[in-house]
Image: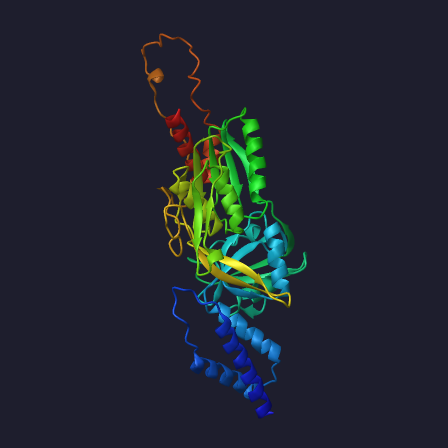
Length: 429
């Protein structure tokens, strides 16, 4: 048996060596030295597991685990996708999938919530960006692969799953019981904030996001009489998504110039993405809202509009994911999600582990309504002079105060973005 396994190990080793020998070598790189000592260590460990592990282990499982570990050791975003996970990620980019509605990454061996998606079980339950998931039902997440964690959280609609999370500022873990749903995410929402001032929220970037955005802008402009005075673009807690979706969204507001470029080792990973003529809101001022949950594709849009001086960015420092992942299908129906490039904003900034710094920094605060105090005005004084205009109507350029306090209390950053947008519109006029 031992000699048989040695032959298998040697065959595996030969396959690895052949793969290394056939790997492309770039002209500016020296030929790679085959790590023979490390390959011998690999085959030795494989042999020890086969012979001495407490239970027999299937060869296929061992090799798949080796592939998972190899990818997990590269960075938090490279991973192995089995058939089910690959199918799920394909469905997710189209905007419909089953589960809880959270975008996750890895940190210190745990699963970290990058962002809950609006109107999903995760968002309604109160899960937050930055929460560390330490247990899924009865399974601890320490050391678990991201693909396995996603598989545990997904399931048939109507079934439940319990998440235990560690949250900054809390003394003990928080438990959440969530019911899985069929998540159908339309990635663009919109409404009017004030006459002439529109609001668009993008929850994530899918293949159809730019089309949804154009529809939203058409409706907003029709409501405002054919032209917007300004727009708030809300990218808070947007975990990213499809790169081309982000490029198309940025292109919607630009008349030309560079949006983003990527740099990697392979020629096909070095690309420039440029805007085409046609700003759909005709140069109306834009304020982009971001926070620590704005990642990846969100940072591409914010960085492009900031570098091209097309928008002011308001909020807190973004997540800082400046890498591009490529899905590479495998013959057995599985796939590899591999980091293949870094992306850079038009001015050459790498966002990796840095994020986008807002033009206007704004901490997340909550406004509490206080009782109004009684004040004395000129009209209350005995013997005051009459107004020569008599009962003149109030100036028409004063905005009604009724809606503003409610917005400030419910969403202070959005209220501040609207105030800034009004100032920009006045300045432009």
